[in-house]
Image (cartoon, rainbow, N blue to C red; front, top):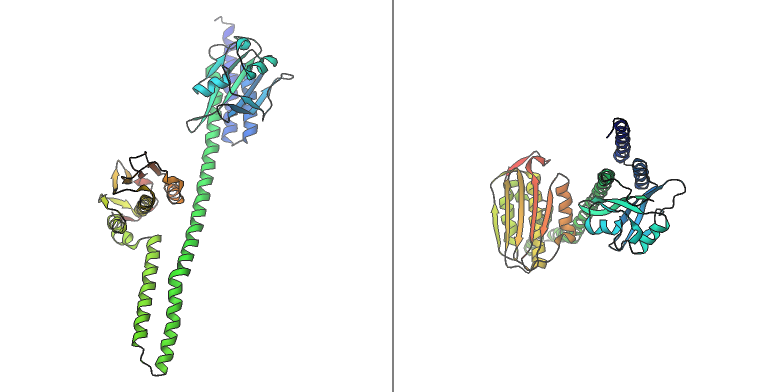
Amino acid sequence: MTASEDPARLEALLGEQAALRRVATLVVRDTPAPRLFDSVCEELGCVLNVKSTDMIRYESGDSAVVVGAWAAGGTPSFPVGERIPVEGETVTAKLWRTGRTQRVDDYASVDGELAARLREFGIRSVIGAPITVAGRLWGGIMATSSEPHSFPPDTEQRIGNFAELVTAALANVDAREQLAASRARIVAAGDEARRRIERDLHDGAQQRLVSLALNLRLIHSRLEDGFEVGGELEAARVQLDEAIQELRDLAQGIHPSVLSERGLGPALTALAKRAPMPVDLDVADEDVPLELQTTAYFVAAEALTNAAKHARCGRVAIRASVEDGHFTVEVRDDGVGGTDPMLGSGLRGLSDRLSAFGGALEVESPEGVGTTVRARIAVAAAPEPERLTA
């Protein structure tokens, strides 16, 4: 490299860094996707000094849709929204198969509909980098040239830098969408819980109390008339006991009193006694926040319910412990497996509850082996200041 070439190379590098900063700024500002995609394509085209660039999103292994595009004046290109085939040895197809940066230096001998259209546009070489979201291939960004073998060896890295910024932007969008969906599920779960409590009160304890009030009026009138009411009083006492028990059962579903009074171990013991199958318990005597104990109890209760309904199991094991600063509750059955309990609303709601303070819910259900439900969260992350001994 001559001395006269150094300033030109430095200027090109500074221009590329400035373009990346502009794209990064758009990412941080949560720029709407269509504008962001077009801006990335334009910045990339100017940096690489090519005639056109575009961005695609894969719909399947057979087709992709153009989501962003830029072309120098008069240069033919695929419009945003057009679907293109994923076939043969095009960069689009090779990206789909490998998930790695790809190039085709000469499209003269490449077969297929897409290759033929590229030649019609005057495109002879293409280089593309993958865009991933949550570890999965989402799409790609491409740069084209009208000359074969026109891209220097470092182009893969340069186009990859732009693809990484798009990946970051899509990750932000994905995180926001997941958060919004989680919040919506939490609201829906709360509304459904209130409706359930209302139904249970109306159909159960409320009816018994109304009936008891009517019977007490009848007893009062019979007393005024001088009749013996011993039998009626005993019946009223039974009705009152039944109403009290129904209210206790309802409160147990909201928050078991034994959990607040004695801790997680006794609460899980009571839960296991009500299960239709034998339950083995291994609950460590640890200092755990009440919020985590409550969540662990409901995870165990929901997992036991799922096991009783779907697993066809002979035995269930529940383990709760603190290891490496994380509180873990695990429910494992020896049933048929092969199911996804997360499809139900119960564990989905608990997953949202865990994620609200940094926890995670895992479900493993291999065919013929059984199902394991595991909740794990850092103890220090729990928002509940009150602490009980499990």
